[in-house]
Length: 441
Image 1 (cartoon, helix red, strand yellow):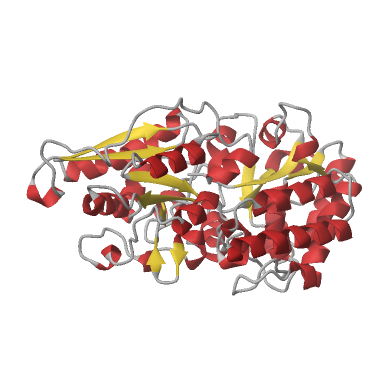
Image 2 (cartoon, one colour; image 1 turned 90 degrees about the vertical axis):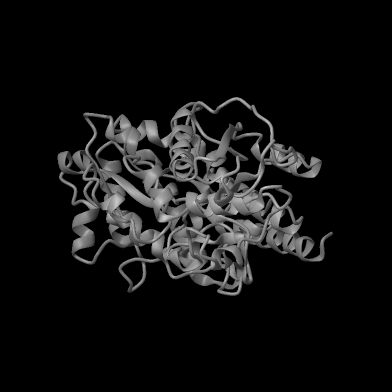
């Protein structure tokens, strides 16, 4: 599952969006209502965004639950990605939202603030819950965890790694990222070297995107926010160095900004057509790349510029949450904890090469897939990484701030402003919107 924010910023991720349809049962009454243990019919609705293949995967999780609870009927309502948040907010305000729904990482904070979501924390302590909080990495809660309260759970995740074209490296006599990694030398200097050699060979070295900049900052030991969620990038030299490194590679022509590509041309198409050596993404590109017979690729962890072999990366996620006004709240909570549990994720992700389990204990789903050699990098990235809205990415809790920050990186990578101006503008936007957020103005 990809974050709804990432769906909007990376066009290659979502195709064939389903048309808006369906209605909620959260305010309607079934002829026989009650929890699943009573044997009476329970009707639930769940809304989600996704393309046809993704919807089939979601349905597997639903079917696995209803097989165990045959008296529970769950209707999946597909909603178009572009209008998903507004549709959900309107439904919640009108009292006719589904019982269960997907929530994008940037939407979560709004729903926590306006009191739309049921608190799952007490239910998750009971024997009726299929999932426990300690089964999920701390960095994946984002804005869904507010103190001890839990308002949503990530159904799977997509940690950032780099994909590289093995054949392109081999054909041009360039040492692969994996060879550097095995030597303990997969760092910025190595990344600079391989992208230069790829450029000299007439290829693009790397296609970059604005929203991955925090990962570059962390790879240098830098910070945008500290462990308490305080903005520190304006005072953090390591962060500035990382932004300068990326900007400098663009100026040297070793990396290409995705936002400067011709309309209709994305990093995925360039990678599949052997035009670029390295791209960054979660696991969502794997199924498409694996279908290309002439494409030989592997994963590599993000290059580190510290004494550590690896540093944290960004982890795109989305959540499943329960409508606070659902008339079947207990059954909805039971279903949600199943959907995100080991059993639920196994039902959805087995044979699905586009996501990574967010729950511990089923890593074999990933490691048993030998389609690509080094899939374990996704697991390490998951366990070390941070979701948007976590304290290390606090901007995800402030409505509109991530977009404002990306707008500034866009200007930088288009060559329209320098690093100092970019950091200054980001700091001004951050301070302004953070103040408004905290004061409620």
